[in-house]
Length: 173
Image 1 (cartoon, helix red, strand yellow):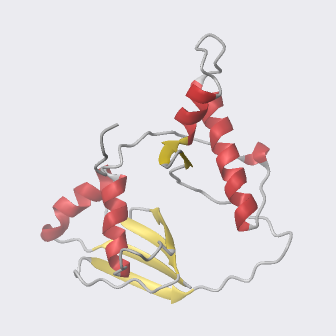
Image 2: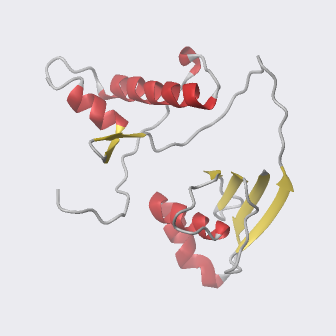
């Protein structure tokens, strides 16, 4: 595996790209995919976190493959990454996710799904922050079980919730 620090090269030709990266998470994801030159059938084998560096868009990426900048837009610093983890170790981490579930072949935002399916009555529905915390924690718990880790739900702090339009073209609803 590899750990990479990827920053946009600060030149005039990338200003429009920088604006796209800062404003649209779907485009951001598409642009980062290009660093891995993946065939359409290849599943994503990297995770990333947006971290600007001196007001220049930047990312930390953990990946199975080494990122390659064929467009010469990025400064990429990469090193091998092989953490040795032992049972019982505890970590603190920051996480930005798009928590979604698939029902009837379609992806759904977990917060809105919980809000309208578990709490359909507006009069008895908890406040939105409570729903966000419940849905987010349940989603992460499900992921943790499949990924082989656990966490203390009382230590989870959800500091924001932003619904996003993906930018993908959808069929008629």
